Amino acid sequence: MDNRTNTIAGWVLAGCGAALGLSIVGGMVFGSEHPEKEGYPVEAAAAAGGDAAAAEVPIGTLMASADPAKGGDVFKKCAACHTVNQGGANGIGPNLYATVGEAIAEGKGGFAFSDALKAHGGKWGFDELNAWLTNPRKFAPGTKMTFAGLSNPKDRADVIAYLNSQGSNLPLPAAPAPGSLPADPGGKAQPNADDLSNKAAPATGAPSVDPAAKTEAEKPTSMAK
Image 1 (cartoon, rainbow, N blue to C red):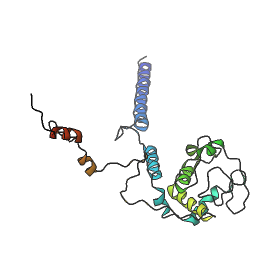
Image 2 (cartoon, one colour):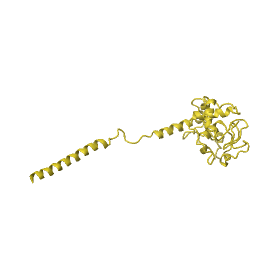
Image 3 (cartoon, rainbow, N blue to C red):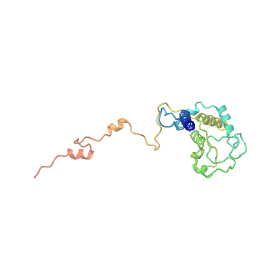
Image 4 (cartoon, helix red, strand yellow):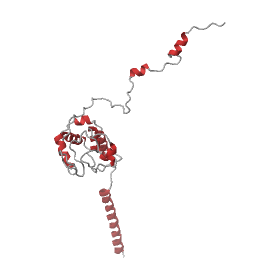
């Protein structure tokens, strides 16, 4: 009876030891460490911000270093839908010969442009082509164009230079002077410091500079009779 009791006790102790050992090993293998820094990385958001900043580079600056030959290589992505040779046929998209400087959504051998692109109006200038190639659906919401756009500003500039070399040959836009401010969208010139100083309101108690008031003050005062 004593031997049997001892045997059972031994098995129980062995089982407890094995369970304890497995628990320790499991904690070492599957345990999680506290991160050095709290939170999650936001690399994608930073990259998106970088693309947005690059898209704001003036087209004149981009075109200064544009390479038509490299643009021809990038244009191969467009060749499934567009031809660019003179007299080339329309396909899924219109023939793009001599497009730079042309009216938007007009001509091109009667190609059926979308109403969204027709409603945009204007001409295919360098700025317009840059915006279109960046995001066609943002440029003309509702367009039939399914191409997502070119996110790389250098690629866009190269493609525009290539298109310009195909029958348009317009002079490239000048790069803006360093530190120059954009023009006022409303077309109103901003007052300079001299204008503001000359038009400052008179201090409280200062004599009026109204011409009528000055003339009235110079008249002789009538004597009481």
